Image (cartoon, rainbow, N blue to C red):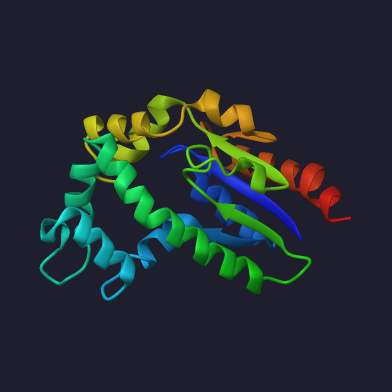
Length: 198
């Protein structure tokens, strides 16, 4: 099994790269998706979040009100650390379960937005970082419905490009076209993944 840690800042196109790797046969474990699962209604994760932050983070339907929670944690580093202390262990536990279910010879891609921030780089055979220019990332996030101020705050709350590069085995630049990104993913697969499997 080849274990790849995939990371990149919000708006970098990391999910696009995960999709391109999945199309080549990789098993992708998406930490963001798991993070949503572990706080769904009825889960111990959601109960812990409500206990920590109050009923104000609940929507009328009993689901987590993500914008309300984001408004709290992105303005307060201590609150963000408290949330991370609840969610990260649950995400890691579920990721381990999913990895254990993969075939022994799988290319396992852990899509982890906060790989650097949570100190997980050493857990992988290869660390793949996706980057994009700041203006490109901001435009993507605004297109998704964020204000530019919110987008800048989210970017500032994450590791810097320099911090990600410091743990990277390979850096992909996703500031250009999808075709250019696909070429880089092909090269990564041919030059790094296939030799690691043999």
